[in-house]
Amino acid sequence: MTANQKASLGKVAFVTGAGSGIGRTTALAFARDGASVVATDISEPNAQETARLIEELGGHALAVRCDVTRSEDVRAALDKTIETFGRLDAAFNNAGVEQATTPTADLSEETWDRVIAVNLRGVFLCMKYEIPLLLEYGGGAIVNTSSGAGVKGFAGGAAYVASKHGVV
Image (cartoon, rainbow, N blue to C red; front, side, top):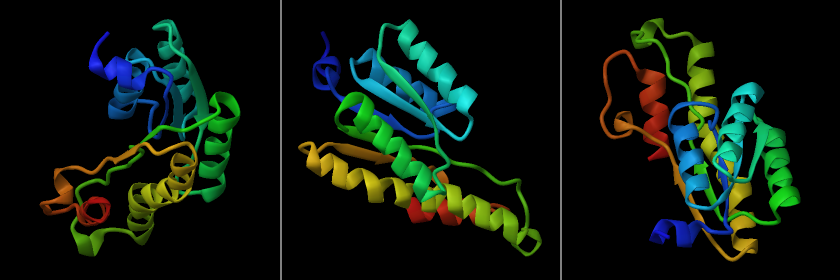
């Protein structure tokens, strides 16, 4: 058993954006290391597929549809986490969206609002409700996904760059 497996055995990890990409890969990695995983995504079928893959590995998973821009969804997903697994030990706040490369003057307010809501507000809401649970169950770890755009801007990415700088 590896050190990661020993550290994760019996732990519970909450992953947003777990329906694809980095989120799915991370959810599977938590499961391989022995953690029970709550796979959340705005796409319920994608979250369910991640949970199926985890169970195929012999792990324990719960799929939950969660729109990280809605505090009700985040609270409900975390409530289901505690109800199902009895604790929270780790969170990977990964849900995010990008924007088409667009000059700032041409960027719609709707696109700005959506990118900021998912990428920045979503991280805030998750942490707002994860932190008390982690403290209640003895501590843990939270990782928030940013990107290179969080440290260096690029032309045509005003909303995305602002959101990722905010996460950093």
